[in-house]
Length: 573
Ligand SMILES: [Zn+2]
Image (cartoon, rainbow, N blue to C red; front, side, top):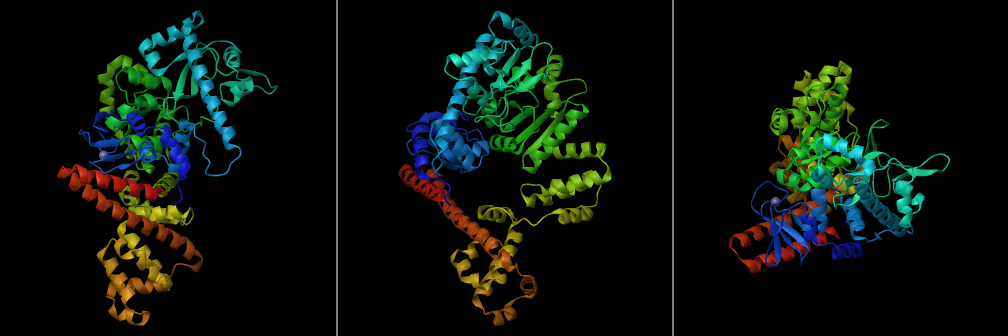
């Protein structure tokens, strides 16, 4: 598993302190040479999360979540390792040199310049909001109850109604207009003329989770189209990858495990103004998978707040579907017709809004209702099969299928048939993904797949044994069959199998895994067995650790924690 390149990792760790990173999400208190706080990965109020800056790792005595800076960042943001590495490297100003890449240094420099330009733009816009020209903008904000405290909290600003204001400001700091275009702050027309992208607009900075401004949204004051305008994609900002207000909301979200997800800037600010500090917004696109992963890392449940009109219902239903597919619980608050978040809060206050939240409809039943109201029969069946086959973990079908069938008044058998017919054999992806797929498969099904392989390719018997298939099989019946396969020759074997085993064995022989898939399937199994063995060892260590903690044996705890992190480190190499 060559997922890390040592030097880069060490360089990042040398520059970023794990305590500083964890603190962004969790209140930490110093206890001796470690820090303690409430664990964001399971629900409780005791400070069971322990962060050790010297050793550079964290450990939770409640849920056993543990690891280093990268593990924490991946888990809390729902990122793959590679993404976390890139983000943290960027933050630390470390160049990723795991692949020889002559352009990497240049890209790194470009990103740094973009961040610097955004920081310049942010203070420029904030200063402009104080200017005489921004009177209308200030009135606009105040009329919506966005007072100075809120303006500061979200870093709101004003882009003057001029073509060259920011452009000139950036040039004074040595940034050419062309660089401003790359950063997404300036625009260029067909004739090559470069001008301010945001003009006569209130500006809403978009932050990354480290608190750096990476893009802007702008709301036009008075007439003008479009009403809202966002930065274009740049080396530091990709549409659909971020959520508005998540930086400000992150602590409230990790503590409550709940997030209020709404459509726009104004909604987020209104919610926070009324005390719903765990609100964030999707930034003008449909909710993306990347955004869902970010939310899933922080929250256990997402409450969608959308307008009650047809367009709002459709958008909410798409978002709910996306969340459910990724295994995130969600529910939907439908606002009454003609109301938006702001007007509802102004009219009925926080308590009034809270009532709507309490009456929120569970995500799946909301999706099914919207579908029933708007869909034709064929449409409904298509949605159902795609939804069920799109589930991140195919074992969830057992949970969702009967509910979808009931909600759409379809027979379960019929729906099951449609789903099976529509599924494509999932043989693509790398060995690691195939290994992970095995992990996610239900234990009984997995045992059958592992044994099917063993029977299809007897040449692997020895290797499967060495890699510990016996331990990896989850069912007693599976282990029993495996022991018999090892103990007897093909000729003797059938005499020793019971009826069920015999049926399975013969079926597997008659319908073996095709030879052309041998390598693919084997790689997945190898990965899976490898992981299972490591998990077992880690589990043993955690048990010992827990015992040491209960016994108050500080020395033993220290020794075990050290061994534990060494082992985690080894896993990652
Ligand atoms: Zn925990």
